Amino acid sequence: MLCPFCGHPDSKVIDSRASEENNAIRRRRECLICLKRFTTYERIEEAPLIVVKKDERREPFERQKILNGLLKACEKRPVSIVTIEKLVDKVEREIRNRMDQEVKTTVIGDLIMNELQKLDGVAYVRFASVHREFKDVETLMQELQSFLGKKSEKPEE
Image (tube, rainbow, N blue to C red; front, top):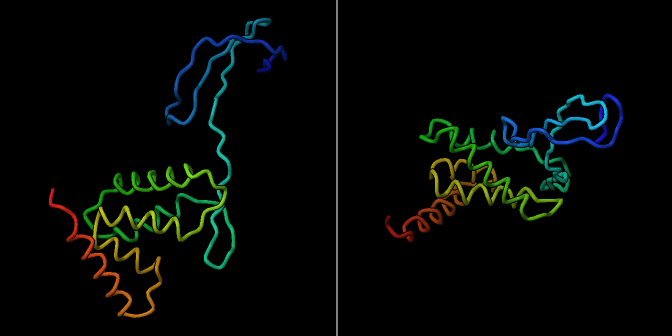
C-alpha cells in the first residue's frame, strides 16, 4: 500500500475493524517514513453476474429487481420487509455460491418460488402467475392444485 503523502510502499496497520455496513474492513495505517496516517478499505471483489433472460438477452444482475418483484407479490400480505429482504439475501447468496457467471431468469424465479411457497401461499401464487406466465385459468388451477398437494404432504409442526 503506497502512502498517499510520500509514496513510500511500507506502512503499518494501527487499527482494523469492520465498516458500519459490515461489507468492508476499515484499516487505519501509518506510513513508516513520513509517519502520516491514512485510512484504507478492504472489500471482497465480486465477479459480475449476468442474468440470461427468456429471449436470450443478457443484462447485469440487479438485486433490486428481485426485491421489487417480491414487494409486489407480498403486497397487502402479512410479510414484513425484513423477511422479504432476508429472502432476497438468501436467493442472491445461493446464486452467487453456484459460481456461475451467468444465471437464467428461470433459475432465479424457481429459487424465489421455493422460498415463497414456504412463506406465503398467496404471494407464491402471485409471483408464480408472473414467473410462469400462465396462459389460461386451467394452467393457474394446475399450479394451485400442485401447491395445495405439496402443502398437504408436509408434516404438521
